[in-house]
Structures are given as C-alpha cells and as structure tokens.
Image (cartoon, rainbow, N blue to C red; front, side):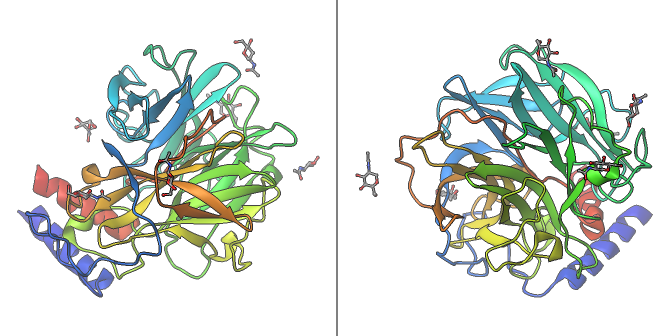
Length: 395
Ligand SMILES: *[C@@H]1O[C@H](CO)[C@@H](O)[C@H](O)[C@H]1NC(C)=O
Ligand SMILES: *[C@@H]1O[C@H](CO)[C@@H](O)[C@H](O)[C@H]1NC(C)=O
Ligand SMILES: *[C@@H]1O[C@H](CO)[C@@H](O)[C@H](O)[C@H]1NC(C)=O
Ligand SMILES: *[C@@H]1O[C@H](CO)[C@@H](O)[C@H](O)[C@H]1NC(C)=O
Ligand SMILES: *[C@@H]1O[C@H](CO)[C@@H](O)[C@H](O)[C@H]1NC(C)=O
Ligand SMILES: *[C@@H]1O[C@H](CO)[C@@H](O)[C@H](O)[C@H]1NC(C)=O
C-alpha cells in the first residue's frame, strides 16, 4: 500500500508539472478529442495495419521484413507495407546474452543487410536508466530462425567499455546504421536523452566499435543544450545524393494513458542534413542539430494521429520515392505503447528537404541497403515513474 500511495503521489505530481492542457482521453466509442492537434500540415498516414512501437523495416527479396521490440524480438513479413503481416517468430531463441536489465525483452531493433549477412542490432535497458547496452545478432537467412547472438558491442552505465567517452555520457539504446558513401565505412548511431545521439564507427564485421579508445572518431549528432532533459532519441540516418539526413524523434514517446504533455511536447519526427556523414547536421533554418535544431517533418495531425516517432526511411532505388515509416497513436484507438500503429508516407524532396506526402499509389519502394529504426520505451526520469505506475496498475 505504501507503494501505491507513493506512486499515486508521484503520478499526480508529474501530471501537474508536465501539465498545461490535458486533453481528455477519447471516449470508448472512439470520438476524438478536439484537444489533439488538428493541423492538416502533415498528411494522414498510409496504414501499416499492424500494432508496433519502434518499427524497423527491411526490404529484401521482394518482401518487407518488420522487426520490433518485445519478448525475444518479434519478426514479421509482408508483401506490402499495408500488410497483412505474417508473424515469423523471434530473432532470439531466448534471453539476450547481455547480462543486464531484462534480457528477455530487447527494445528498438535495427536490421541491416551487410556482406551477405543480416544483422539485428537491439537495445537492452530499462525506462529511465542509462545502464544499457546495444547488442547484435546475425543470420544468413531472414526467415529461418537461425540467428546467433553476439552480445554487447556498446555498454553504458556498467559493463565493458562503459568507462570510455562517449559511453560515459550517453545511453546505449536505439541503434541505427549508415554507411559512408565515399569510404564504405559503416557507422552505428545510438542514443536517447542524456547527451543525445552519437555516431560511432564500426569494424568491418559490424560486431564491435572501431578503436573505442580513440575518441576523436565519435561524433555527437544531436543535442539540446538549453533543456535540462534532452528529449531526443530514436535516430535514423538515410542518404539521398548529395545529403545524409539525420532523423530523430523529439519529445515524449509514451505513457499518455495517464496524461498528456503540453501541445508540441509529444513525439514528432525531425531532421537535419549534411554532406558529411559525421556532420555537422543543420535544419532548414540553418540551426545545428547539436544546438537544439531539427526541422519537423511529421507531427501530430488531423485530430487522429498523435505523437508519431520511431522513424525509419526505406530508400527508393532509382526512380522510386523514399518511404518514411514510423509508429503513431490513433486517438480513437488508445494511448498504451502497445496501441501504437505502423504508418508510412512517401517522401518528396523540396530543395533537398524531405516532405511527407499523402497517397499510396506509387509503384512503391525497392531494395534498401542497410536500414533501420527507432525510439522506444525510453523516457525521461519523470516518465519512468509513470511507467512503473502503469505497470503497477496493470499487475
Ligand atoms: C522480463 O520480461 C519478460 C517478458 O516481458 C517478463 O515475463 C518478465 O517478468 C520480465 N522480468 C522482470 C524481472 O521484469
Ligand atoms: C571489451 O571491449 C574491448 C574494446 O573496447 C574489446 O577489445 C574486448 O574484447 C572486450 N572484452 C570483452 C570481455 O568483451
Ligand atoms: C564477409 O563474409 C565472408 C563470408 O561469410 C567472411 O568470410 C568475411 O570474413 C566477411 N567479411 C567481414 C569483413 O566480416
Ligand atoms: C584521431 O586521432 C589520431 C591520432 O591520435 C589520428 O591519427 C586520426 O587521424 C584522428 N582521426 C580523426 C577522424 O580525426
Ligand atoms: C484510426 O482509427 C479509426 C478507428 O479504428 C479508423 O477508422 C481510422 O482509419 C484510423 N486512422 C488512422 C490514421 O489510423
Ligand atoms: C495516383 O494518384 C494520382 C493523384 O491522386 C492520380 O492522378 C493517379 O491517377 C493515381 N495513379 C494510379 C495508378 O492510381
């Protein structure tokens, strides 16, 4: 009972602090509240018809392969982004080899095809904790359940390498992948809150970080100097000649069942660009992403789509448009993390800046090289308390 009282108190406190307008939850019958952003600046999503938080999608052999966080990392396949999505089982046979937090429930995977091998990077963490790790599993076939887990390649908080910068100041979750187009050097992006998002070089077999002690090879890509907590996570990097695009999710991802932040403080999908994979990245107003910059490409809209994030891009081959995909909450479905839906839009580029467009009748996307993913159940410290409150309420 003490626990209940404590949690209730903290939840009320948190709701007050985070307060401002508190849109009421939708009625069970599904009428949406006018308190949700009704802007038509962003198009409605094309429906993915699958519930997923932090989606990651690979296009390979004419099919789409969806990876998501959850018990042992669930995998699905579909012939179209609209589904139907067939569950294939899980990437891992059991708990991750990484000896920290809940090894059974990795978050926010990112799958990559590289050197005739499939890699699935994943996160092990706990909401509100920086004692995290990014692990990796590999397989030679996507559909065989034959993945091998190689354990951690990055640790923060505790574990091998966690005493080396930038692992001393960052949170090892939300992996994403990019290759330097001119040198072929592979990189991992990761990070959430704390000191934001980092880019680190990987060894050619993608199983370790190159010379982690040589700190000048790492780059802080996204940072918000002026805010006490840095609500940036779930990064992704895409390339479209001549720019690299650094995407990230900004704001509050989860825990909306118990209250909503001020309008605009919920997740939105932001971007900056650079001609160098290592940056500096700037937004459309010329503001650096390390100075709090980031152009919003997709945000809550139409009173229906709320807190989109967990972004990824499928790069269209010649002549095909890129696809922006993400999760969002449908205000007439619900606000639990498990209610998040897969949505997607084609991207147009205006003066080299991506714009999400409506419609789903393009001939679609083609093979994407390495791809990737999103934010997750990571919250700032206040929201962490929320999650525990919810867990308690649900248990
Ligand atoms: C870890 O996650 C699994 C799967 O969600 C769950 O059954 C188990 O209770 C969790 N363990 C702990 C210690 O929270
Ligand atoms: C610890 O990390 C270093 C690289 O930072 C690596 O060379 C070494 O093999 C790792 N040790 C273990 C036990 O994983
Ligand atoms: C690429 O794959 C081949 C065949 O599996 C392997 O022998 C080689 O070591 C791999 N290269 C790297 C850099 O991992
Ligand atoms: C990092 O520093 C080493 C010397 O310690 C230098 O050889 C290397 O070129 C530097 N790398 C970058 C990317 O600046
Ligand atoms: C939201 O959910 C309603 C009710 O299920 C559905 O009719 C509508 O198409 C959904 N819209 C989006 C954008 O998911
Ligand atoms: C695709 O949509 C555009 C604009 O709505 C329309 O002009 C075109 O006919 C459509 N193409 C197909 C194949 O449906």
